[in-house]
Image (cartoon, rainbow, N blue to C red):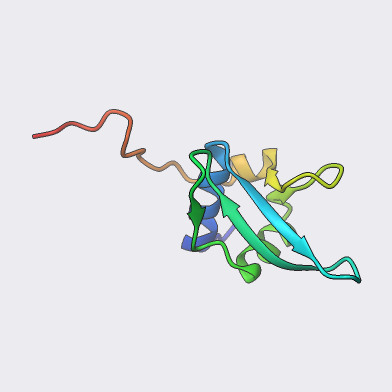
Length: 91
């Protein structure tokens, strides 16, 4: 499955314990999203278009009105990425 760089960054943040917080209008449509990392930072790459694409591909899901989180399918499609905090050596 083709996943863009902003989608990959969003999925990595979600895989590490982040969530996508959303805001709906009166019709019930999602009009604004914010990806919040486990540490509490907001990811700027997570736009409404990125969110809709991830939702369409079923890589993120919400249960019972809770924030969107990564699904098992999302974890399977996630490419490995070196975590800068783990195993980094200072030369």
